[in-house]
Length: 548
Image 1: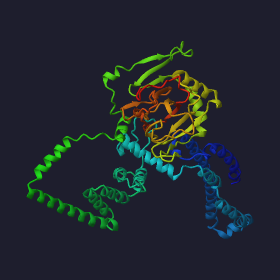
Image 2: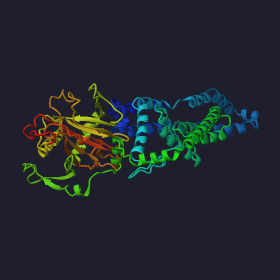
Image 3: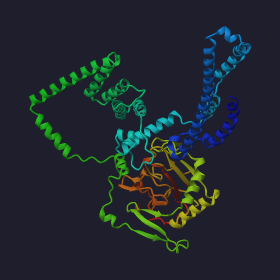
């Protein structure tokens, strides 16, 4: 016990050093890079827990030895009590045991070996992820399920593309996802995950969650989606397991009433149509209308299709006009002997990729500088102009200036030498790390005409161009897509992509509306440089018409 109490200050010192990097952060689910710190936190907790277990086992072993010794002694003594106590040593030892040793045993049994573990847990708990983190991670799984068209069983069994560390979900995990969806009145996902929980229970998985509870949620979610007949089936199944379930009894009566009401309404409608003799005519009109209807694909659907690698609009003819080359930016002195590798990614808007443009050592340095400063990424409210977090941007970012490290200054110079654009008026290098299902839904980098004050405080004009470094490979997902033109650019470590947001006239190029797809598997690190108009007057002269 003394050892455990003395150990606490050492643990405190260790924990304080481990947790300094966590103390200023929250929104863990928005950055995989910072979530890695939590693994070491949990490892420390496990070590502390094992110390507690060893202390408990040691205590029990001492109690067991004492019990075994006295069991043998009392068995012998009670066979001839007077004869046994006739020996003066035995009489003395009995007095000693009952007066002293049993008291020592009582103290041993009552001793609390949890002090060290509980203290460690209490210290660390204040840095634990919050309910918001758990909900955010759960919603990320639902988002990945929709974007990449994954069924619940695929996610639950961990069969995702390229995974190294396969992990399966328990009934409790599936049930928790269903409950989070339910709390948002998202009955579609509630049904999917409660059905998966029920499937695993039916397959014999042991769980603290019972089928009655799952069936209750499942039937209600199905009813909310208008499928009353299926809702009735699941409710009847629930009643077979728990015949006294009061809510289920009431629901059965209600569902049966609604189904009867629907049946009568259908019969009445059929009879009315038959009397008027218009049933066939109306069906023909309906079919004709469906045949001639070609609705435009909503942006959200195009975005998700591109994230899956579908819907790309690059034709073979256009593809044949895309090339790769060695680029020296008009024989810039830095690139005469060592030109950079440049390849065309897209023609309209013109997007180019530079290969082997940032080294692994530079990437690690940038990540090292950025990681302690990562904060939840924000967006500018188009109405108020205030920076705020948004559900459609799940990442953390940090800003690095050129004067704080030679590596950042060297990177800025490289971008200027390659693009020929002035960097003094550009924004600082922004480093971003995406979280669970990390994404940034379709957006413009430049300020539109209805946002005249978008970058007013900078005094450097609009964002003329975007330079984006990919600082990690991504196992699955994480593409940069342009929904309006059907383009997709996939992350490749050590490369960078570049495009102009404004035409030479200064007008915005609306085809550059783009998005960062959710990361399905892997860890996505990027850094970007937003280049502004001021200082480019002689480097990129103004055009004579809007789209030049």
